[in-house]
Amino acid sequence: MRDNEEKKGKVLSVRLTEEGYENLKEESQLHHMSMSGYLAQIAVHGKNGLTPELMVKIQRIVNVAYKAIKDYEPETAEFLEQEMHELWSELK
Image (cartoon, rainbow, N blue to C red; front, side, top):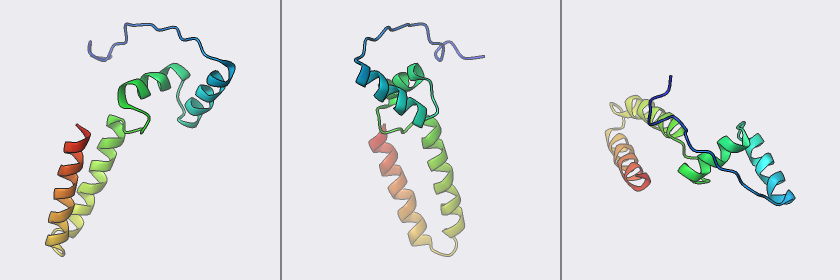
């Protein structure tokens, strides 16, 4: 069950041209989402596709890379850690 903050209680009706509708349909299908879900995602997260789920996946990959190199390449590991901190700061 969703938390109260996650529940979607607002409904929006949108008018589109035929071309706009087809573009939305194509984009939502490319992302394996409903058209309303796709619109909601880009409204909240922008069109860059950086959803919280994707950001978690990126962080997990970087964590694995960091752990793999920290004993053998400590300078590279430190650089990787610093770059990720800067990236998350920019994305907030």
